[in-house]
Image (cartoon, rainbow, N blue to C red; front, side, top):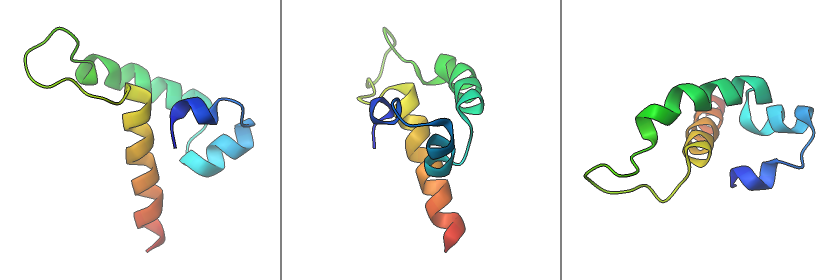
Length: 67
């Protein structure tokens, strides 16, 4: 699921799907953005935004905690 698809969700639904609140998610993006945003640098460019990359990690974390 892309971050843009989560925008219209309520805060409770967002936390249920991601495992963190919107404010925590925003703080995580702030910390990760300088490290993951490779625009203009050598090497491959990412196809996913920082928000989408973080969502992938959080979804995997939720999925593997249940098993």
